[in-house]
Image (cartoon, rainbow, N blue to C red; front, side):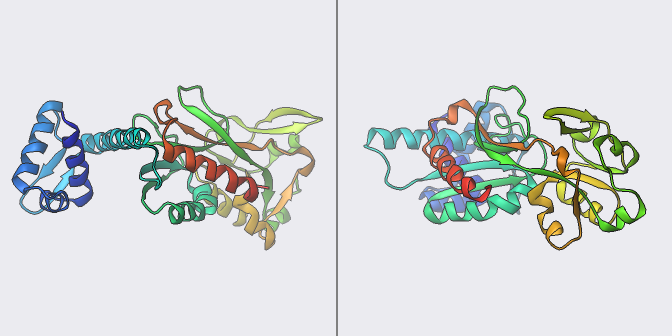
Length: 295
């Protein structure tokens, strides 16, 4: 396997055809085809599916593309370091982030970062799941909550306040909870893994877990918020998800004296990316912007 083959493979994946990649690289289509066949032979894996009409990337090819792009980025950074440093930030950055937080907070920040660094190629995945950062080829993931033990490097970006709330319509049908013990008699809309264990609230300065039950468990906060607005029960969510509904009176907060602990907000990334200039500058930018917006 040659470095040139990695460059050609990434060009083919991005261009979507041997012909377009060959034109971009000023190579012949036949040469590109031969190099891709040699690459697949050296890996003993099918990376590209070819037919007369179109070219598609296999699942193995998609995984390999993430690793290949990181290798090329590392080579580029090494070349720039030897030549005296780069003036223009250049390369790719692939990030995973939670759906709601990504849309509410990170979407405008990503656009701002790209305006400052137009040569950076950004790829994002918004999903409420824990991705395998290394195995799926991500350069970084934004995570909320308690981090599991791993070999990833973690940097704390801030914390997110949480609130318990319900709709006025729901509260008209039942007595509002006066203490966390009252939660047992209420329909509680539960988020992800926390929905399996209960809600952890602060009682007399100490954290205590309270069992809750209800009709809905979801890994998406906006879905739970909408269910609460519809009067289906109480919900415990980060404040930024329910803030618009609270402002217009569609939801009201409850048990304010028994606040749940805030959630930690982290960026995690593989150890081999800690020297990446793109990672470093993006983290510095993110920390500065979130410091202001999360206050």
